[in-house]
Length: 109
Image 1 (cartoon, rainbow, N blue to C red):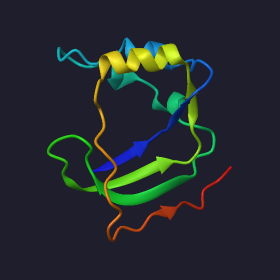
Image 2 (image 1 turned 90 degrees about the vertical axis):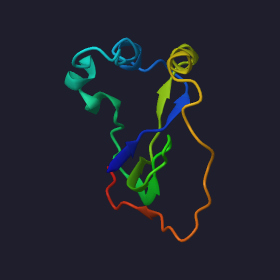
Image 3 (image 1 turned 60 degrees about the vertical axis):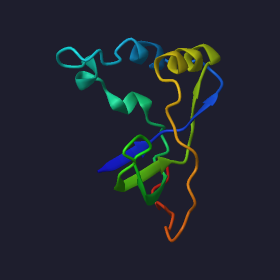
């Protein structure tokens, strides 16, 4: 399993996020997200940090290849509030590094 994580910081309203929240799965039929263009949520600079880790939700299974994009995107405080209403408590605490090695990709634009 692999995870690609995009970081966000408060700032300007992101043009895609408002419509994304309205596409959140309801549990009925095919999710509208199946046809969502994920490229609209990726920064131009695709450099990333990579490390082996685990899922952030129970059962927190190991064996996940994490790729965290270095360049953050922006979202407005209204967009952050809307996300928090949909997904409260969505992350676990930071785990110790242990023996893991964090690598940075050579890919930069």
